[in-house]
View 1 (cartoon, rainbow, N blue to C red):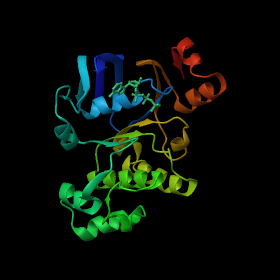
View 2: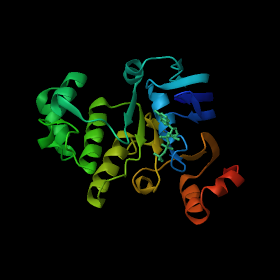
View 3: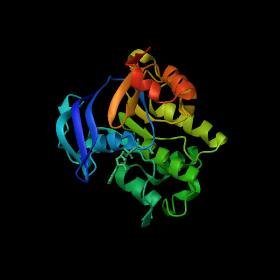
Length: 244
Ligand SMILES: Nc1ncnc2c1ncn2[C@@H]1O[C@H](COP(=O)(O)OP(=O)(O)OP(=O)(O)O)[C@@H](O)[C@H]1O
C-alpha cells in the first residue's frame, strides 16, 4: 500500500529525515518507535503532506500512485488519515458541523458514531477548545471513524488517555484497522507511533521500526524491540541491524 524510497526531508532548512525506506503492505500494521526528537512525527506529517516538511529527494508511493508532491487534501481523498499528537483547537468551528461537512453523513448518523466513542455531547462544542487530553484523542478517533481511511497514521494514541478510555480507544482503533476481518480479506493498513507499546495489547502489529536521529536503524518484531529498548535503551538499536 505504501512505499517510501530514499526519502530525505528538511524542516526549516535542516535535514530531519535521512534516507528513509519503508514498505507497508495491504492489511499490515507497523509500529514506529524511537527517542524523543528522532523524527517520528516528522515522518507521519511528511506522508500526510503538511507544508513546511520539504522533501529534498526520494519518493512516496501510495496505492501505486506517486504522491510525493501531492497536496494534503488529495492524499486524504486517496485514503490517508491521521490522528495527531497535538491537534489544533479551532474556535468557531463545531465538531459536529465539521463531521457533517466532510462526510456527507446525516446528523443522526454522526450522532450515533459520536455516542459510540462517548463524544455525543461534544458535537456542539468548538473543536478541541477546552477538551481534556483524553477527549482530544476520542475526538480524533471519531474523525477517523467518519473518514474511514484505508491507511491510518496514529501519533501516540495512548498519550493522556486513562485506562478505561484506552480500552475504548484500543478497540476502536483495532476495528478501524479491520483487525476483526480475516487476514486474507484485510485491506486497511496502519503506522502507529508508540513510546509505551500499550496499543499493542489491542492491535497486533506486523512490523516494528526504530528511528534514531532521522534514520530507520532497525526493523523487527514490535514486542521484541520494545522489550529490548526497555532493558537496554535505544543504544542497542544502533548496535543491532535486525531483531526478529
Ligand atoms: N517546524 C519545525 N521547526 C524546527 N524544527 C522542527 C520542526 N518540526 C520538527 N522539528 C525538529 O525535528 C526533530 C524531529 O521532531 P519530531 O517531532 O519528528 O520528533 P519525534 O520523534 O516525533 O519526537 P517525540 O517522541 O518527542 O514526539 C526535532 O529535533 C524537532 O525539534
